[in-house]
Amino acid sequence: MKILITGGTGFVGSAVSRRLLESGHEVTVIGSSARRQPTLHPLLTHVVADTTRTGDWQRLVPEQDALINLTGRSVFSLWTERRKQAIYNSRILTTRNLVAALPEATEAVLFSTSAAGYYGDGGETIKDETSGPGSDFLARVCRDWEAEAGKAAGKGARVALMRLGVILGKGGGAMAAMRTPFLLGLGGPIGSGQQWFPWMHLDDLVNAMLFLLSAEECSGPFNCTAPHLVRQKEFARQLGAALHRPACLPAPAFAMGLLGEFGCSLLKGQKAPPQGLINSGYLFTNPDLPAALEEIING
Image (tube, one colour):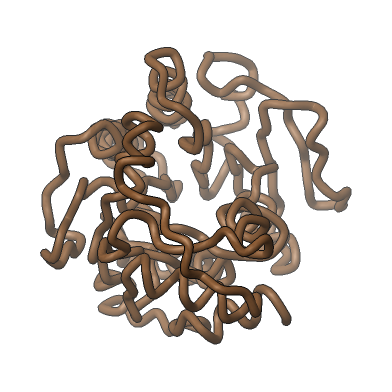
């Protein structure tokens, strides 16, 4: 298959493209910076483009059998109004431009990422794929993001919406950000730590994408989370154990409040099981947090 990946040079995109190339697919990755070069491969094409803008990169879209939309500015920073607009635009405008470039009566598949944050602060309520969206900033971003992707179905595309939890893997992502504080003995629960912490091993995310790529009957939203759900406090404890460090230094709720809207978002969680993947027959390779952390850190 010919597959195009927007955001293809990032943490998740690099892992997805690597697996697709190993499987013999012809892959085009689009990244926003020439400084981030993917590993050379005879089946790989690298394009540098700002996908929030229309441009020549869109001419590649009609040639593809599948599109994987991973573009999005990081949410891990203070949310100034300017930053929030960049977070929003990077997702909504890229998706809009991607769908606009699809021809009518296409038979392509579109995998468009979203996030478990779609549900807002879920509290103790189980949030499966039939649950409605929340009302906070991230929930509104996800709602609009998915709405743009859903327009591809009107052109004939099969659309899968991947609502990602916190993706854990080697060499980047959330694990890279959390590892140093824990190694320094500064890790611990955020606020009460009772909020649910939806997580997924990077390998399972990649495997799930490949599974859904071949499952022609599968479309709509999918919670990309591990089946064994944990609270944030338990996640911190397990990460500390895997790193042989204590995890008892909490980040108080009032301190998170000092980080503004972003800090408050860390006090929220979603009890979001991967019901769609389970119902589709996907078998997880890393369903349990302790084993997953052991593999990432010491594997």
